[in-house]
Length: 327
Image 1 (tube, rainbow, N blue to C red):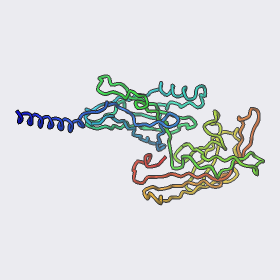
Image 2: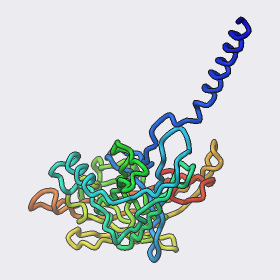
Image 3: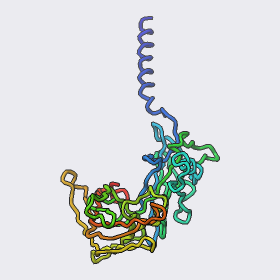
Image 4: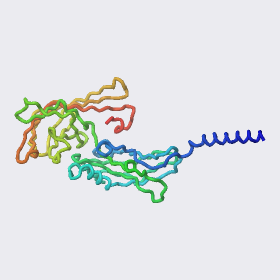
């Protein structure tokens, strides 16, 4: 009797340890399909796409499978454009300020397959989005809203939380000269009051026009202005090292007082040697313009002069250009 009890006891311990050791092999959570597109302060995800005049640029949007195991079968995940979610975001954030609304990107600027394959025993798939952004007007805030659609065969489940099953991708095309410049050395003054304390903006954002041209908003105007598209100042970077400033709006009364130039310098990071700092400095900025809409029936003339500097941090260990730039 005693031996039988000992045998039963040892067998029970064996079963206990065997079952404990096998628990990790079983799925502990739900296997949902989600976008990897973390939201930023505006409720969207900024993505950066190299601007090319004659060809497309590809952005790879990850989809991930949640869970503790990689035991999923091969899935074809359906992807669609989600206009309703973008409309809801616009109204909830901006109400009647239509000039602040994100605009849905026109289908002529992009293409992507209707399904993404996530291979057997994998937890990541990549949605290949091809962008052709020639002639896009960056005075608008373009967003490509995507959603994981339900599977007609119920083979997979989109994540029940919209934060994960949808991606609102704000498109930021870039060239060698675009980005957010430091404006601390650029003085903005009312004409005739140049000796008074000038207006200084810490950051001045630039936007892509083509491969060698960007535009700024004149003076201290930015995306907060409903009439911002009337105040574009274009800058074309030439191989000679000069920058050609110009405007296509005659009502702006744009006048260039001096020819500008630019320099490009590079420096390795002192702590992280794989990180390369690239600086683009625009020197001798000097122009006049008229703000003709800020005050009804009254024109305000401004003088702008100084310099701008853009810093790009490049991780030389990452081969993909849009990923190597630390935005």
